[in-house]
Amino acid sequence: MTTEPDRDATWPDIVPGPLATPSPEFARRRESGPLEPAAMPSGDRVPLAVRYEDVRALLASPTSSRNLRLPGLPRFVSGIGIDDDPDALINQDPPEHTRYRRIMQGTFTPRRIEPWRPRVAEIAQELLDGLGDEFDLVQGYALQLPGRVICEMLGVPLDHYGQFVAWTDMFLTTSTVTEQARYTGYADFMAYCADLVARHRAEPGADLIDLLIQARDEDDRLSEGELVNTVFSLITAGHETTASMIARGVFRLLLHPAQWAELVADPALTATAVEEILRFDGPPASAFMRRVTKDTDVPSGRIGAGTVVMPELNAANHDPQAFPDPGRFDIHRFTHHPPHPHVAFGYGPHRCLAASLARVELTEAIRALATQRPALRLTTSPESVTWTDGLVYRPVAMHVTVHG
Image (cartoon, rainbow, N blue to C red; front, side):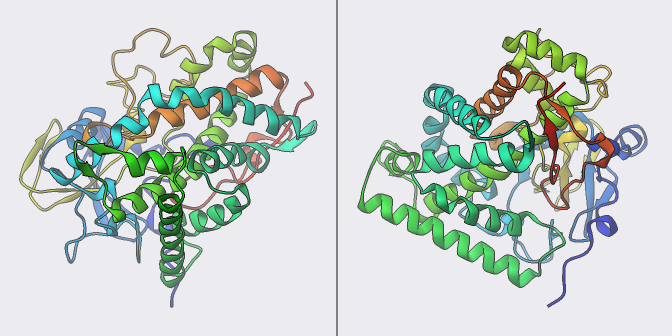
């Protein structure tokens, strides 16, 4: 079994620039080739949409399908991937997707998530209390906080967290495991999720899995496969992507000490700072590819029926037509209503269902650091921070000190 292609050999158009800034290719593409093909980690080339209005149009279009399981279509990664499971919410189209989402949406409203905010803040405080004056913010804090939150929300033992990390790392990597290892990890992960659902059915409680089991739209409930996939998605997104945004967000803030000082002086700015972090640095992985089911016009041109296209969320969030001076990081950008909302959580029917939870975790993680570790700074140069090589891009480690 051969390993998958090296990231630098197949992903050149989208690799972030220095200090994890957006790829400089995005600006060139917006000007001269807004729908030019780009290489995916699999090596397949598909049109890459980089303009804000094109991305929004694709994500909202009824001709934009998530069914990528037809033979011969371009792949995002070699071997099994998230695109392959027909039961996954992200892979469904209307009317199946409409039904699935309608059943679930009440579970993730801000009203249902907001009561978790004090506990998230408490976990952040507990983690910081256990850290010394110098620590690795990624391993000691960013990865730990969402891991503990999702374990509590799903009602699973915290000592299973390490297994979540191993499975998630295996599944989200692009170059370090074989296709067979990826498949095995995926199968084991799904089997674990199925067992979780079965145990909650046998012994009902009041955890998030129990709420999902009870969720219904009149007499319609989620199927067993849909439940298992939802739990899988919550663990994957609830652990790695949120952890990555915490790490990336803190890194960005520490690169702007004057803005960090403002946040320390006025922690009420955290919520709007988080929106700028999401715009500037999020999401840690791009949107999922779409298959256009019939000829579709977007502002930059026509996309032919049958074309598989990648809407690039980070490029859209750095489009100067939507966000003036997009390369400037500004925690005040969203204090007043900007002309456009960011698309870090996507847009349209597949917009991230758990966006409220991600916002709460990111906000409380950064608020705790600003209030409890105001003198936080990197102990090494920003240029020396190494970054992961996978579908989710974050610092491998980020050593910090609380001494000014």
